Length: 80
Image (cartoon, rainbow, N blue to C red):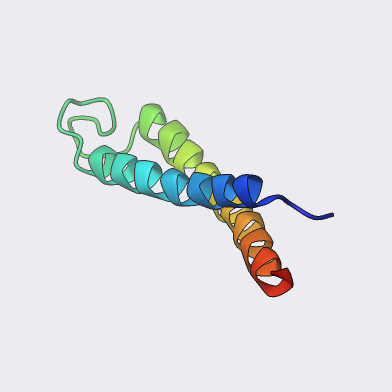
């Protein structure tokens, strides 16, 4: 399957965007002082684990989608 230039660049940008957003979110989750992510004893709460899982899944999906976009961009550069 061959991807067009716009689709390849969109997928690559989506992968990068996903990493930027979710790394920032994970940092903020780790530093949470509102009591949502950690209880009074400092132990992680269900909120923390659910959102950490979302971040990890998004990292993986962002990497896969970005990798597909990167392969598409490289393939298009070789053919032009």
